[in-house]
Length: 257
Image (cartoon, rainbow, N blue to C red; front, side):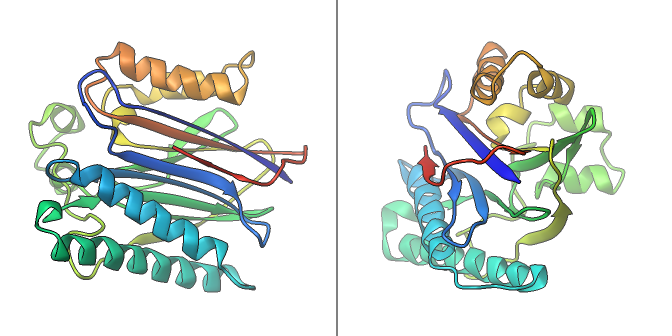
């Protein structure tokens, strides 16, 4: 299966700095990887955290040796995320201006038929298949915990003033545990990774409509998602990575934003 990736990121209409960081590309072993990280912290600390996390993950992935089974890959991915956590945490501990910085992260690793999704925080992964857009990740947020326990309705959660408060982030504590899941991956599937600058403003039905537009190239689909978030206010940084499985070969390489 050929795999194509497209990445777009925008600072939005309100923020002065883009604290999102992303990367996508083909790894030496043949896997395709995509990463989105949404940083947080004080003055310029958020963009430092997300950049450190993505750089650490990309270095680990590009040095990856032969891993035979999906379970071995999952264990390796968990270790890579823990190492990225240590990089961000140690940097914050040694530099007062970076104190308490952290970042979300969502990563997809895909081969010809299976994939791994790892995440911490509220950056999301979706899979579009046969007319259904499925959210693959579960937000690590206070509002999601309250919704799961029945204390908030989905409608209340969408408007809650603390909806952006994370219960888990990369780099804020010395240890962190990522959610890792195995997914199946077929020709025709689309994987979307995105920061909450998209999902906090754009309805899932509108995201799906943009991804399903038969007249649009992937680059146009990605830009449409950015444009939808900007039209809805653009009050946060917006980052999307789209990964498509198809029967055409894709050139190796990486893309960063």
